[in-house]
Length: 120
Image (cartoon, rainbow, N blue to C red; front, side, top):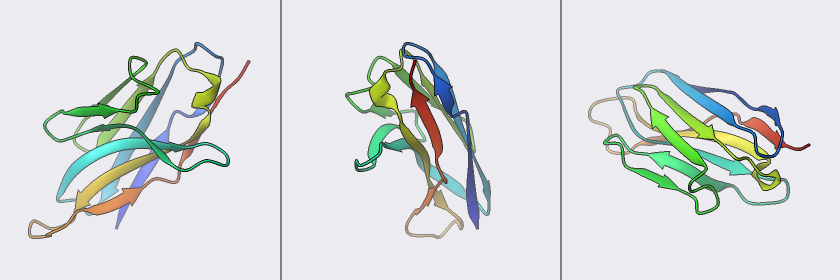
């Protein structure tokens, strides 16, 4: 199996910064797109940022200019700056995993989520 361990969530003041990290472990042959999603209370889960294997990045309009995303082999980090109250949400790591060389499809793996609360 594959598991994702997220870290870095917590309480921050508006305008502050936070770095979220996600480490993937288990049976992994290769990893495709890695990213972060979030879900605020009463709202649907939404994309925050993703990064492909070749370094192509995609950000939600709401976080463009305030966030960066980077990846190592089995790790993806989200640096969040100038945080706003509306950034408050549970943030979920998402990783596309192939467990075998001949797997036709990626397995979508989700972390349990880490809570980010932006409040004064």
